[in-house]
Image 1 (tube, helix red, strand yellow):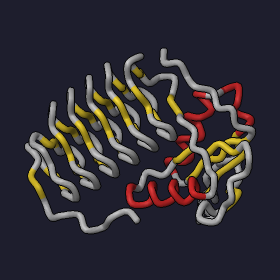
Image 2 (cartoon, one colour):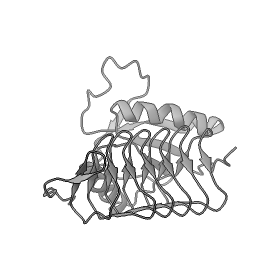
Image 3 (cartoon, one colour):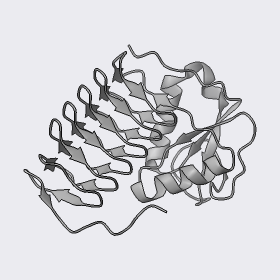
Image 4 (spheres, one colour):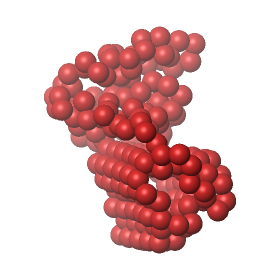
Length: 224
């Protein structure tokens, strides 16, 4: 079983209150049962986001204006690639510190590396010498083969996978069941559509769809 790092925070706040944020709430409770009582609520720009959700924790503030307090530990629970980095960097510029969350059912090799603020979801796998950067989302059943890597703020949707020695750069989004072939590289901000497979190197700002993957129009929306 993966060793779960325990937060030293006085209070834990989940950044994002959508469906994924509610999932992360449960996974945080699974990962840190002794600290579950420190989870105080959510940061969301939509004060009504949890209406009729059944969640008993409040939305405490808008993350775009919130000033993190000493002892706050933040968990980045935003899955939308265009928003993740912007919100994370805005909070970090005001002193926010992001916690690394690894679910107890995940498999993380002793030689693997997990960057600060990343979330490694249930049943995901980081194999031998694999690595993910800062604030990466490795959703459930996603996997990185041996020596594979994912850059900062990348998102791997459920069942997405990287073959051995494959690499995706920062802000790459991989859809459901998307994959990158062994040794192949995907440039920054590219998107790999659901059920698609990149079997050749992909330049930055591209969209890949199909099997084998074909290159679509260039992505013009950059994170800023």
